[in-house]
Image (cartoon, rainbow, N blue to C red; front, side):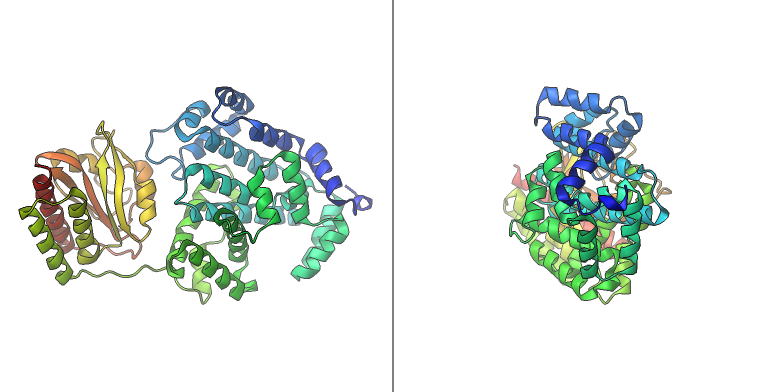
Length: 486
């Protein structure tokens, strides 16, 4: 690439990147986007597109079995099985993400400066995609994946350009480094390329058939549609987190916009952002892109360095008065037949505000009694419980299996490799590292599920008095359930 090739405009660069610089990626993306949804032939075509690429297949399976996607389901060992378990669209998007990351990371003939710029940009895009996915966590899986991909590709024009290498790329990199002002940089880019990176992304999106949501987000970032707004805000948040010192007020503004959009406090959103950051690091490794981790900032440290609302949850101390009130209510339910759901709600309220926990919930056994599924959750990050706490009971040594089989409560003092009781391995990172409480939910002598409580957000450990109170609530609730079901 030489300097006399500048000023060519969006059509020139789109064609050059698609046909000469990244034809393999372009072809793969087009094929993946054209595959019909929920079509048996599509699954076969998808399998053929990765079957001869062992590295890609390995990455897809690692991601499919990661905590982000595998919610307690047995490990999958083939792409076709992963598509059946997780859904074709999800596997297609995992494949697209893996192809994109590997193609960009394997870019050749780049100077150290340009390659570092590319890594920072890729890390920012990946982080932004995870933030966007987190912001629509209450929506269905298909929309979450669509939002993730659209955010990941939000700056594909810029990433693709830097990955091409050559004289012009090096010269533009040098000019931007010597002119840090963002307005000046936009002018320099347009002057050298004859177009902007945003317009180049739009050109590539159309040429590669990258779906309507990405184009809509690029053309109308201020649209009030929640998912489009999420993509825009998540991209800006990732950019701010990468360099928060450049515009601390702008960073605070984005945090408030995101919190308001989700109708939660800024503190709660910041807490979710910290957890999302931890998940982002893990998923980058699963995608074979460990090199990006050093360029994905530690969100918790960013908050510490700025005057931002700290991601702390409300500290709920044990309240004996509330405990007594809720226990009296349950005693009344034990005398007078009361609806099952009312008993469960009252017991959880007593545990939540009376015992003083950060979150609690009920998980019920599946019809085949081999899986615990979340039924009700309350407290900080209750949504994680509702979506992530799916526990397979295939291991009889599991503390959850023991709780059900022995019909007795357990206090797990700490979640770590040294914990004597076995835990559900693929759920461990969602459990509180400071420990948790579980107790059987019973009707008569039959166990229907378990009560669960922890103090994950405030990093506090339980005392014996807390375990006794938790056990009291669960046992009295079980008496009420037996009465209700007679």
